[in-house]
Image (cartoon, rainbow, N blue to C red; front, side, top):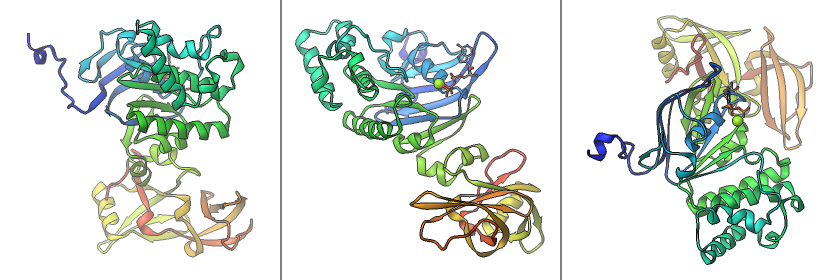
Length: 376
Ligand SMILES: Nc1ncnc2c1ncn2[C@@H]1O[C@H](COP(=O)(O)OP(=O)(O)OP(=O)(O)O)[C@@H](O)[C@H]1O
Ligand SMILES: [Mg+2]
């Protein structure tokens, strides 16, 4: 039988390290946790899997690792279909939120454990451990036991233990979420460096959109087991495919304002609380094509201006963050609109009646029914 007939050739192209094709997962209790989902991770790429709690991130990762069997669909590591391959034979390393180090072993022995259990000769093991320890700043700690380390150091040991093996892919499930905020930022930067230096393929699960954006070459956003969008962070930020993605990515979230479409022979406008806004011709044409009567307008806080514009609002709260200000406004119908402005902008005060404006090139339009972006 040829390889092609067995279906285990690289149908995804040579550059793919991990691939899920139409993968679904329904747990025994009837919970449909995934799918179907399609995801291809290129060699050397870091893809962040992002979504709210319970959306299926860990399930997807565990299916790639072989710790969970998919209900249907195909899983590949490199060119090999691994549905029937045991976890230990899949050539992937998993790093979890909890460090799971062996408490009775030194850092040195913890790191070399996966090599020893694969029968690697002692000299080679020592070299690998030294390299990994150097890369993660652990050289001075090799003789300590896990209990004698800080949380950040323990997580670095767990990372070192994952990288000594040089697997085809690293699977990381919220590896930084047990660290405090400062250490998280520092370890995040170290992880990015490590990924670049090793040209490692990484699938990185997080519910933290900042982590996903800063680390991912691409981010994949999941909601209720369904992949909503995948793309480079900036592209997803600039052109979210639907309302869920629009509001999940970015902090503060994108403002959303319900509006009615009013079209005449000349142009397309939208009616929002207290104002009617003409849409630029291409956007208007796209809205007309989509045939939606009701839309949701989206605008990021950094793109709204308090400048006497045509959208009437009342300032309700001004939050000063030092380097910038978030001005929380209410439209006539109570819709909240947050404006992000520089700390040195002339300050609005709670209770002020203001006029907002939104540059039309920064206006996102979504179908109110489906939530889908109206593509221009
Ligand atoms: N072993 C299991 N048996 C039954 N249901 C499960 C099992 N593991 C997970 N689930 C359910 O599947 C869904 C997806 O869970 P999963 O752990 O993949 O979510 P997650 O995105 O990783 O969430 P979190 O951010 O909270 O870790 C959830 O509804 C969860 O309750
Ligand atoms: Mg999880």
